[in-house]
Each structure stands twice: as C-alpha cells, then as structure tokens.
Length: 319
Image (tube, rainbow, N blue to C red; front, side, top):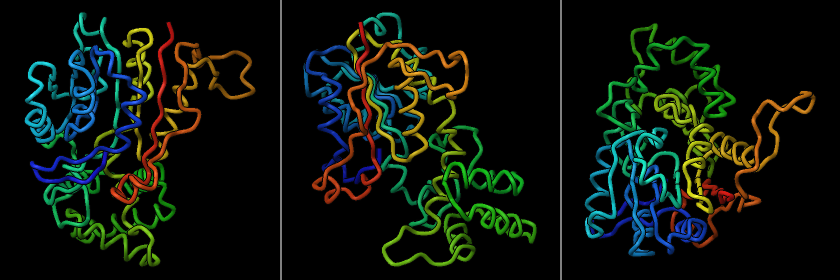
C-alpha cells in the first residue's frame, strides 16, 4: 500500500497501478471491493475505467477513509466507503452486491497516510508515542502496551517470526531489562535507539537496524496475518464467475500465505508430502494469472523507492 503522499492537490500514485487494473479488468463494470482503500488511488483508477464500475472501499483507518471519500466524491454513489476490517467482507456486502462482485483488491500493509504521520508511531523518522494501531479509535492494544505486557520469550518470538529479525532474543532482553529498571519503551525514538545499541550500527546503504522490529510490532498490534488465508478463500468464494482477485503484499510472510492459498484453490495440495490423505481441502476453483509475483519495474522504483518490496499475485475465478 505504501506510496508517496502528496498534498490534497497532488494525490499519490499507488503501487503497481497499471498492473492492478490489467488483472482486475474493471472496464466491463460491476462491483469491485478495495479492501484497503487507503488514499483511494486504486479505487479512483477502477472508477475511471468504466461508468458502470462501482467500488466498496474498506479501511480501518477513519482518517484514510475520509481522505478517500473526499478524493472520490466526484463519482458520487459509485463509491461506498466502509469503516471495517476487510476480513469481514462477507458481512459487508449485501446479497445484491455479492451477485455482481467482479473483483477484489487487497493492497496490504501500512498506508502512506499512516507511515508519514508524525504522531501515529509507525515510523522512527518521527519521535512519537508507540501506537501503531491502524484504527486509532479502537480499544486495541498499542505497541507500547505490547512491549510492557509481553514476557521476553513472546517478544523474541514476535520479532523473529514477524520481522525475521536474527537478533530477536537480544532485542527482547534489552527491552525487558529497560522496563525492569523503570524505563519502559514508549516512544518510537527510544525503541529505535535501543535496537541500534543492541545490535550495532548498520552498514552504509543498509536498512536501519530497527526496521524489522518496527515491522514485527505493527503486524502483532494489528494482527495482520491472522485469518489472511481464510479471507482469500472467502473473497474468491464471493466473486462472480470469471471475477478477479488481486493481492499486493510488502513482506514475505503475507506473500507466502497468499501464494499457498491461491495454490490450494487452484487444486494443488498443500499438505505435507508424507500425509496419506489430503486434508487441506485443495480444489480447483481459480486459475492463477501470475506464475511469479509481479514486481515494480525500474521506472516505478525510481519514482517510489518504497515500492521495492511489493509483490502482486492475481487469479481468475473459474466457472
């Protein structure tokens, strides 16, 4: 989802925009669900493709939803904003909408509005409270709460599994020692500084040493991986025959889940090789349109370096 955020007069260009439209094929009209509408760039391109296209734009972030609604106001009732978790897609769509669902787009991860906010705690570029909730109005746990409440072993697991951080145990130990000394980590700057001290300075040109820790915390706070495979199956089940599903991910954990679920739904068993009977429920209901994930080209990367880790996968629902 991450792309540069311009002013209200210069909306951002979303990642892999032309490729997304190519796979979704909104020119034929119908209903499309933008599961993470963000700043509205993908939805705008869908609505511009056909006067018969409609979009239900879902987002947990009220600020992003307000921005997208303002940006897409010229399309009037062809755009419907929905403040919800995209995993609730089945309950979000009414019966008539399900009969006309032609495409689902899931542009996963943090949005530019969140990443560039100096107060939301998603980035260590700004010194801010460690919040990281995609819906700041929710009663959910913040990143600071998580660092205070979780034991050392659980913190190490989060950093290792969600951030693929090889120094996970050392970072977790330092965090726990800091809170035991009466100085719990509560701001982005203090966390970034602690991680840098714990693992050492990065080499010139390498990512900041706290990058993986911040990613892991964000995933844990928002439970970004929970139920992702079930969402993919549900979204495809709701699609009209010949409908398209497109997912854009920004880290290997999301991409792996999407890849495996699409393979299962294309009829490839995902069970361990020695299992005598298939228990994963593999069935051929989609045709995978991307044998390999689609990634940004050099021109897009030059314009938007944040897109470097984006991977797009797409499929078509069979009749």
